[in-house]
Length: 305
Length: 305
Image (cartoon, rainbow over all chains, first blue to last red; front, top):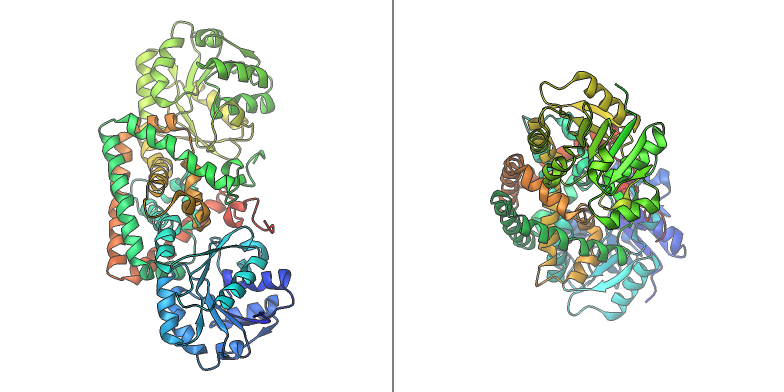
């Protein structure tokens, strides 16, 4: 099957990036768009994000052969119900959500008998909304597909091809395993970042001004992901509860062990861990998933500031 | 008093950055250097980091009017003892360590009656060694001085002037308060980052390859600071134990509250925190302590990768 018309439901960071990437890399595919927020629709129209903007989700998906739901995972079920009647036979329904078991369950319940292939492009920034997107967001990033066991192979191949043409690398995974992997590589890091930024801003003996001034000591790195979209992340934690709580338990055990090492003055345990963790960063840089430049290559680095 | 000759003891990231910054911004000050590691001395010689390299610490400090100890905080006492006999009368002894009460105590004990003004430039990268330094490291960063109560005002002014000319902004603080502030803005973030990277690399149901591949979901940000110098950081935790354990207790309380919110499906609590934390990042960007570009302005951002 060949995708000729894609409907993008939700035009925030991810949806608008897909729209831009399709225009740039696969201009022969027609883009149709919808967002539940009238202000976003208006802004998307102004930015010329998609070929055709629609006033309803069902209008956007009519005649589409690929529908991508780019809404928070808590809104998947209602978005799916909204398009159910207008969805053409044989159209692939996919998404970009960060939890995959819940999405597969919600879409299967709302769209029985349809071709559902959940997906998660592991890419993003801390910014939100239609202005934040850009065409190269998916370049060299992994897109994980979590098709149900009985998924149509041609549809999986078509969706893989679509993402590959947007620059992504494809991996196929069980939704349950996806949720465990992403709990550790994404969800727990976000939870920890939100927590420490919250802790720092609630202190009575250290002012908020001090936290801001001396943030270059490490804290500022955490504030980036703690500036991510609140609704999206609330939904991730509520919909990937099992894996998040499991991984959080392991993290807390490890943190408690380090706390004990600090209390007892056990420098050897600290040094052993601190040496070991460098290897992971080397792996990430070798795999092209981060910049090797110090400080992420921040602009102010190497300038007299 | 005017500083005419500075001795830099320890030529890693910080020491070599000071050497480069002095050459660039205050070339009229002569730089003398020493490092306990013969390989670092050789490398520093090859890089031309300081005007004169010495084979001993006492050789480097003889005739200096400012000595900056750029060694891990656990090595301050022995470094101070090494220079005690050769140190000229009236020379300022300072440092760049990340904990300040322990440094003040150690230097005061080893150098009774001398002019001791501990300092902490809140700047750095995850890289180590003489090659990692650069002249603009301190530009627009805060340098915190923690002089003892009876400190010579002229010496404090001279040291402030020195750091200002390297591009830094000056703050004077009690060592105890410094240690509390930095526990939250630097030490706890490092501890958490080391922990989560360790947790992720020890999992049996998620492979290290998967952690690396999908690190763009947030995890990769943590690996940067978890690649920092292990000896330096071991020493920070052992020497700022009280403040670190205090802040760690608060962080753990807050994390436990979020864990409960996830378990009970309390989306409101999550959303409220996730909205609140954005303000801190805005403050950091407005204060010029981080880059406003998405993803820290990483090089791969905005390119097709």
